[in-house]
Image 1: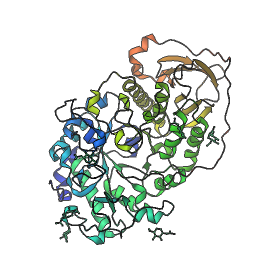
Image 2: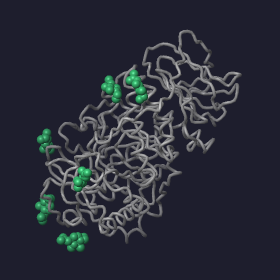
Image 3: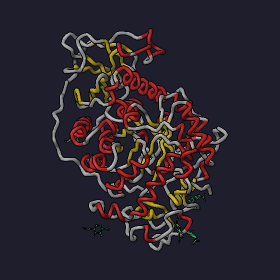
Image 4: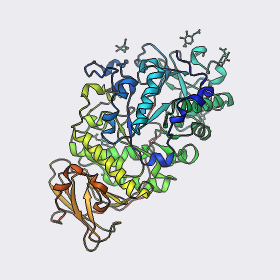
Length: 535
Ligand SMILES: *[C@@H]1O[C@H](CO)[C@@H](O)[C@H](O)[C@H]1NC(C)=O
Ligand SMILES: *[C@@H]1O[C@H](CO)[C@@H](O)[C@H](O)[C@H]1NC(C)=O
Ligand SMILES: *[C@@H]1O[C@H](CO)[C@@H](O)[C@H](O)[C@H]1NC(C)=O
Ligand SMILES: *[C@@H]1O[C@H](CO)[C@@H](O)[C@H](O)[C@H]1NC(C)=O
Ligand SMILES: *[C@@H]1O[C@H](CO)[C@@H](O)[C@H](O)[C@H]1NC(C)=O
Ligand SMILES: *[C@@H]1O[C@H](CO)[C@@H](O)[C@H](O)[C@H]1NC(C)=O
């Protein structure tokens, strides 16, 4: 085992000098790519190593392998990589498989050697820094894992958490309407129990705060992702995040906006945007998906959260079924995948989406070996993410207020949502591939009359009308993301097609009903407690 016990004292002579920790403002301009370390890349770069996801075993991905794929990730414009938890996990096989995902903590003071050595990890971090990329480390504070449920007797193999007094008395999380039960009982099952640490205990608090401080100082991680945030009391977090001293994003797995917003107010500035995740999937999962529920949610978020621009937006992650598990219309997929980039917040993309991984219903099915895709940089989605990231960063450089300007719904129909986030304007549709031409007229936009707009997806230019409106044609269900052509510095957006861009946008309103959906202040569906975070 590699000892991390003396982290605090080592901090001064460590990588800290190189660390370019990201604060909130720095993070706003970033885009995050999530990998499962075990499933991303092999040390020698080979792409044939088999990985049977249903065996739930380690497949052999490493830090060294990931370090060899930084250009692949940067090629899509992502500049932060969220890796799996790094600490040592319980070993052996269980009915839920092995700890390949890294969420079954045993000792926070040791590394999970399956992913490589301490030197390999530090090498990954410094190679990323050299490419102006950052590494976001995943941390678990709520629990450690054990295979001895009920009669768990901690010992030295749990590092600093070797005493029963450091744990809550055993009980299962079984009542999501009871926040004490959620915070002080254990997740998991009798085969793998996530023993709940007593995060009210000042000794436990002190251990965690100095651990995270030392970890950041020693390794120079730019940011952290925090697991199972809602399972720890809200007021534990501010001191922990402060000790980390870097941007922290928390997992509060719940769809009810006020529930999640309370964590932004009381615990940490950034939380994953689960409230929009559910209506986002529902809006694009079929050509009859509910678009008005999504537009209502976008509006609701701006009034519920202190700061929507700090939310972590995603379509897929390791805990949920990939979007493509149930949807195979390429245009529905492309529209849904665009949303996290054009609404308020920081975009997060889960590895493999650019390769068309389809995952499945059960969580292990969504953790395919990336190397089996051969890291193809020619896929439509690889290029699509590149366009979206380029557009965001060019807009942010031209107008830094872009990242903090709140998005609003410019219009919404049964099949379209138009999101205004000046200077960007996006029109997403769930009409699907092969749906022909459908036109709509957008009014009350943030642009002047006769402004040249470039659609960064289709690479065509359009112009607002004399009355400042914009005629939009949704062609075969394709998403459109408009930016003022004048802000396209050095033609960075659509560079490969810049000379070939044509003028379009002539209004053909025949047959299109501009069915503006009134925003109904309806009751939210409480989604609390539907999910049990196991790993
Ligand atoms: C672990 O157990 C699972 C389920 O019982 C089984 O499918 C898998 O092959 C086992 N893995 C190993 C490495 O023994
Ligand atoms: C410590 O706990 C682990 C997990 O419960 C167990 O496998 C191991 O045998 C224990 N070691 C000792 C020395 O009790
Ligand atoms: C528990 O861990 C602490 C800190 O590492 C150590 O000082 C103590 O001796 C350990 N106690 C037991 C019972 O192993
Ligand atoms: C809530 O959960 C705690 C912990 O399990 C339990 O002690 C308490 O009785 C529960 N409260 C209610 C009202 O059920
Ligand atoms: C689409 O989402 C809705 C709402 O979540 C759900 O009821 C429905 O089953 C989903 N349809 C498909 C095809 O996944
Ligand atoms: C769409 O969602 C809205 C808001 O949640 C709801 O009022 C409406 O009934 C839904 N429409 C359909 C067709 O399910």
